[in-house]
Image (tube, rainbow, N blue to C red):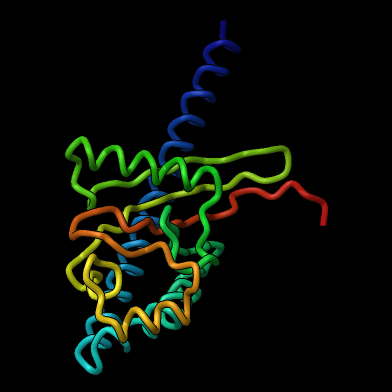
Length: 191
């Protein structure tokens, strides 16, 4: 009987510990997404003020990856992805794509884009990884380069930098994409 009680107690504490760890990981990932979002919007607003949308393209093209890299510390990997890509380097994997499609459906059902997020712990025989995604809604500042009506000079620069661009035609509040954040929890590979 004692061994059953001891096993239950250990299982109970392990479950509580795992839940606390997951909550902490989620909080850290959410904070990284919020920081990335704020920093990117600040860069875009400053770029728009100085030279308009053409300068904003450079901010997204150069500054966004730099911001993601700067936020990728302490084992975290920070990036962005979308169903309708501008930068092919941000292509989603299967899990990310399924979450983006779920976000899109939740928006159709009336959920606010700013509240959409998802997380999981992904494990295989080699690696255990925490994954988190937070939706990026189209903001008014995004429309100059991602909206229905884009100036001809902006279209020309976008076509030059992103020949396969599929990230136009958006309206404010729609799902532009998501921040995708992950952290390796355990690596069982023998390197």
